Amino acid sequence: MDNDPQVDLLIDLFNRLFLKDYNTELVRGEGEPVYLPADDTYPHHRIVFAHGYFASALHEIAHWCVAGPERRLLEDFGYWYKPDGRTADEQVEFERVEVTPQAYEWILTLSAGRTFNFSADNLSQNMGPSQRFKESVRARVVELISQGMNARLTAMSEALQRQYNQPALSQSLLEQAQ
Image (cartoon, rainbow, N blue to C red; front, side, top):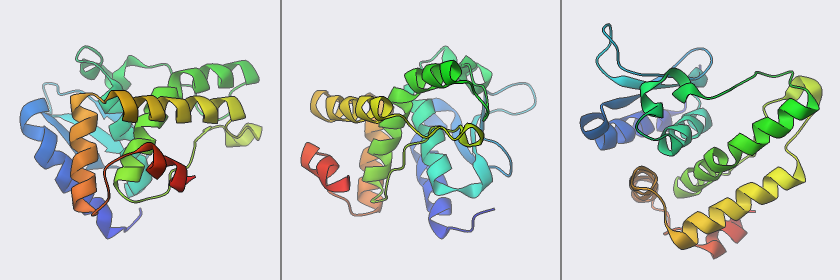
């Protein structure tokens, strides 16, 4: 379990922003990340991120920001996921569905003053993120910065910028981060 003290600040920040209005809390996990909707045994939706890692928390928050109201009622938002060990065709599908979540994650990472790393999530097959995937994610970030973000992503991004004394998002900031 990572002991980054900033993780506790991130948990507190997210929960202050979203627990009341979205009934969703960010939770430090010990295993694989998972999104769990509220049920009869637990009253809040939970974003459980892996091993207390700050980057994992941002990635899972990004998935939550992408998911619409119906998907936020499904475990792991009802998304397809095949773990490490995907074939080349499965990797192409993984990259296709990860463009927007990783673009959101990049925005959140910039907002927190941290370095973004692409994730191909397929280490056993020696498949890193493809150049096409990287370009697609970057293009999506540029689009979001120039055309606007949804309310949850905007709120989280702005709160991180305030917390970490970071400038407003811009295309030049994105270029500096590469």
